[in-house]
Length: 408
Ligand SMILES: Cc1ncc(COP(=O)(O)O)c(C=O)c1O
Image (cartoon, rainbow, N blue to C red; front, top):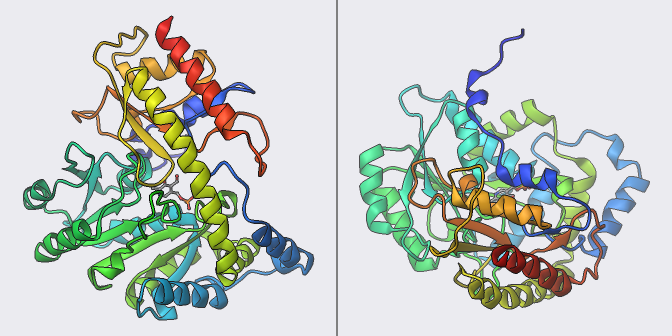
């Protein structure tokens, strides 16, 4: 048999994917982190026009279209008072592509320097990408509100001596949004300890209670930090695979080479959609405002009902997720010795998909076993995504099924 990278065997597929694969048509899906609305009409039109012009026929530039890089630069400089140059931006195959290119760069960089710090709870790929390339993930703690525990951060950095840390705000799975103050202090600690910051900001379009997004580049220089981002959630175009990295020019040049070797160039047609999203920013802003309102409405409907059934949660500040704690007095039997997994599969039997905590925590974590992520970007499995999904009806249906499961 052909020999392959043995490290890949140590990575398990996520339970989110497993559960998603087992959903039946008509089941309520609270498990995936995808927007429950289509891309804005002007973005779809731009992609159609580009297709009609046969632009999909071409390979584009390896680092992505100059026009799109230019527009991203302008956007950050205008919206966040940055001083970015086009050389600070590379277009990637989604945010995942940006993260993976960076891991590939680090994997072979220095044999003695192969640790990445991740706050636990985490987005699964932040850990699995590292493991698959022989980089050791080391963890730092959150406080009880799921924000970074800054005291422990310093101690953990000194204990594990990682070369970099990956943070994520707005956060998947917790819904936490780090404040400017928090980010400033984190940058100070990382800078003093020579730890490079990678900031995954893929949910920046979904801060739900009026605060503005804080890119890490407002608090750190580009020799201390970088941004991984994408249009996947921002413009609801997850399938188009358009992401971007913001970093120091030297790093961008290297990331461009890695990306070029992986994918030749980013998806040409998708880049036209992303370009339109930024060029017609006023229209896109209205789109985001409308979607944030709908997500907020769903979140606010969901929280008291989840709390009422013994699934305790705080109000998510951003992203699409509530991270719920299963009440101690809820007993669940099942084939696993992990309560959250048993409960997730019980919900699945009753027509609801949720994401159990095992995907977001390491095996020894105290945060493993009693939690689950519930997405308020709700869909009905097998149904096409349209503008007018009856999202509150679906949410009610899903929550009723969960209540029935817990009462049975
Ligand atoms: C925190 C986080 N980062 C990155 C991604 C992947 O983004 P993309 O689809 O742009 O690769 C996701 C997707 O769910 C995510 O939740």
